[in-house]
Image (tube, rainbow, N blue to C red; front, top):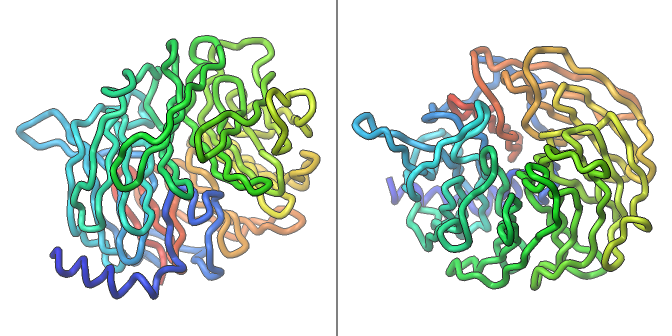
Length: 424
């Protein structure tokens, strides 16, 4: 089996290089897929290439490099109630499980939508990087061997989040970065690690004085380049902050996201960045901000371009591209806005249901894909007005929290119950 994996990776690396999905938000970290031709219609039988059962619930999105799919999950042995953090490697063509690697003991989820493996893995094409609620943080090679393994909670302090750790690690040009935003003195930080060794390169505190649960964030930073400088932009603890990727230094900050000091404004959705502007959801999906990149220090009074109440998201992360922002609310309103002004271009309520939307939308082949927690996927065009293209069910009872993956004309949908490959 190891030989088969090596052969498929070698043979597939060149042919599939355009179809990499290295992080939960895709090849460019912005929710936009490469390629043009993706299925818009499927059912429990139509256009389902394969399905692989998975153990237990998880909200992490798989990653794809070459012919390898890597995902995180938890497994419990029948004789042992204590679960283990696991990383699975699957063959992309068949869904066959090629290897399984244990990375520490599971710390189970508290919330019904949560798990011990909400953070999504990463890959740079050489290694797969994983992070778990337990604090276990590791790099594996593409055959599943552990390259390095450490526990951030043992090194830097316990997890104080009220719910389940959800922020995913990100890759910069040189490092892998993890954001920890939680309650407690000196407990919130951003840290960069060497990809090859796991050694810390820099670590900076992110203490902003937000009250109680508002100090906690489950969002993932975004990497962008502005005026030639690689920059990390993140939201949480009532602020949007930007940091230099080289050393973590704070470049600028925008506050006033919680003027009434609400104690429960924890953040989940990440920001979207495009065209020199940050689109930032906040206030549990009640507010949306447009913030100009750049400046120095506190730029709240000078760089907030617009703010909008009502059309925002608590959990799904928006998309920004070509002067537009696409917003999917937790209750299924899909909207297109002007990034420059925040003005609504169109908005429409998708089919109403008792089920919410937790997965982030994806833009692929000119269409927006929005998957509801019951596995129903809505496909909408990105024109001047709203036009629904299709509505698709997986034909069985499932739960979907993970953002889907789009590679080479195929869609990977990770449910609590299994991994589906949609495509001919």
